[in-house]
Each structure stands twice: as C-alpha cells, then as structure tokens.
Amino acid sequence: DQQVKQNSPSLSVQEGRISILNCDYTNSMFDYFLWYKKYPAEGPTFLISISSIKDKNEDGRFTVFLNKSAKHLSLHIVPSQPGDSAVYFCAASTNTNAGKSTFGDGTTLTVKP
Amino acid sequence: NAGVTQTPKFQVLKTGQSMTLQCAQDMNHEYMSWYRQDPGMGLRLIHYSVGAGITDQGEVPNGYNVSRSTTEDFPLRLLSAAPSQTSVYFCASRRDTYNEQFFGPGTRLTVL
Image 1 (cartoon, rainbow over the protein chains, first blue to last red):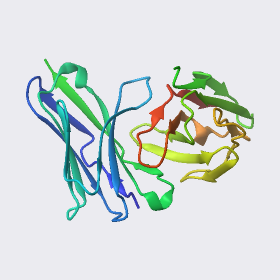
Image 2 (image 1 turned 135 degrees about the horizontal axis):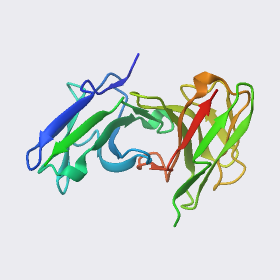
Image 3 (image 1 turned 60 degrees about the vertical axis):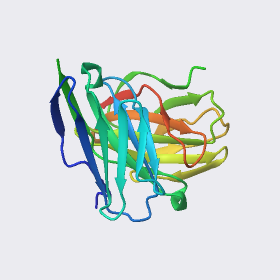
C-alpha cells in the first residue's frame, strides 16, 4: 500500500508558465509534508515544506498548498524556468513515527525554453 | 561545512560479496537515514537512527546492517550482495523530527 502517491510521472511546461505538481496521501497521521528536487547524479535537495496546521506556504516562486480533507497537496512554481527541470519528490512524515519520511515516486518536470 | 558525504560514488560487486557504504555528516544532526532509489521509484527507507547508539529498521531492511557509534558516521553494510540490491543509495541527515533532510550525493551500486 503506497501511502504517498504522485500520479503524474512527468510534466512538461513552457518557460514562464505555471507548473503544478500534485501529491496524494492516505495516512491521516501525516502532519508534515516536504518537497524535494533532484537533478541527475545528485542527491535530493529540500525545496519547501508545510505543516498540517497550515494550508499554504510560500517561498519565492514556490508555493505549496495542503488540502487535509482531500489528503492532497500541490506544489506551484511560478514562473517556471528551464533550471527547474528536475525530478520532484513529495514526502510526508508523522511525529508519532520518529519523523520518518515516506516518499512518492516522483514527477519529472521539463520546462521548455 | 561539507554537509553529508558518501563514499564510494560507484561500486561493482559480485554476488555474495560484502561491503560497507560510508556516510558522514558534519552538521551535528541527531537523525540519519539510509535510502535506496530504484529506477522510476521514490526513495525507500532502509534503516535510520535517531542518535548515536540507536538504530531501527525502515521499509526494506533485509540484507543490510547499520550501526551508529558516533553522531557523525552512519555506515551501511551489505552482508552478502545480491543482484536485487543494485540501486542508488542515499544517506541523509536532519536536525530533528520536523526539519528537512540533507542528502549525500549517492552511491551507485551494481551487483553482478
């Protein structure tokens, strides 16, 4: 049973437009959510996070939205840039499990110039 | 700060061989984890540690051992390598429960 799902393996957008990456989860105990970005042959790097007490967190071009009732979160990138082309992983954790993170399978974003 | 370092970057093993993947962090983080990433999949937790002397199993612990004798180091041991362990291995650390993880650059392991 996959507790964190990223149903779109890939997404292609034009430079300057909005990129929306989606993530669904099944475990209602998850209370902290993170997005990581990964370039080829590198380790993932942290992008943005959100606590379950919030429904939105913004950091520059990146905004994460959390809909607890739907068990859904999304990452918005505006405007998208070619350097944003990478694999994006959604992760969820719960304080009741030593904060262990469960990762989705990732979405490959391609931003075309 | 070097962050999280992993050695080696690449390794080829024959079935049945053993080896240790090294991981070190210089950020004084209590939490450390080992993940594997297979093609088209996310990161799956192998083992983790919440402090020196404390380790526990993750989702896919079979065939791997860990120890945490110091805060800085968290080596992962493959006891008897199998082709199913061909993967990219990432080590990560974080300060506490509600913080982001810092990942190493990964070790690409091939088992023939």
